[in-house]
Length: 320
Image (cartoon, rainbow, N blue to C red; front, side, top):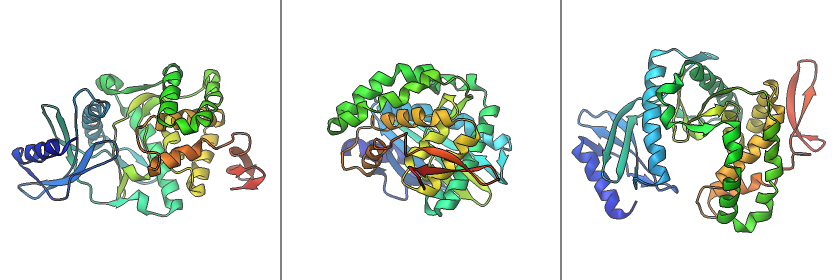
């Protein structure tokens, strides 16, 4: 969004009865974020994009519809796990004018999960994943079907060549490692037993806020329907370098009988992340490139420990 479009955005917010109380900043994906308030002083979070034909515009439009539905659902239905209730921030208003789309939602007063200890993050990520499974069971898919992406096994495989080509195009210096990811994805063909359901596709500690015993899950731009285990792969990728979080998520996948899905889904998600157009030195790009180095023969093995049936991830012959 160019500077003149940013001014149009701010003026559009003002014309709708709001004022910016923080700077409205642009992220690496050219989305604008900030905090605004109405004339009564109520605070709201704002997310905006421009370019009606762009992917970011279409994704935010889908998020507007999905979040509106799910926020109403979590307001009326009591979804609980481990004493925590799940809520999706209420959508206050959607503004569409010309090439600009603005999503205004409730400002959540709470703690960022990202600021907590690794141990607490790990357990809360599991809690949120369980709550999303419950939310899936309450969701009437047909009501939001036009706005959901397809995360079914067949669709993931159909898009694999495109993911591969785009990843190589954006990171040619890592072309060999990217291409060698493909054999790790192909076992998806053999994946027969798995659950389908609501997929957030970007669950991680930065998208979770906690207010007492209520957890808020934000950022539904990539929401879809398909392999439910895809939900746990996203935080696994984002938090891969944190061994406490990584081990807890891997153990959860194993406990659910999804050990065979770990490598193909992790590899596919890595390719998807490498489809994002960011600079080579971007911290997220550097994180995603490190995922290309994992060796399924030695880096991911789940072994039983003790008589309690718990599992731990190990690297080679050393527990991590």
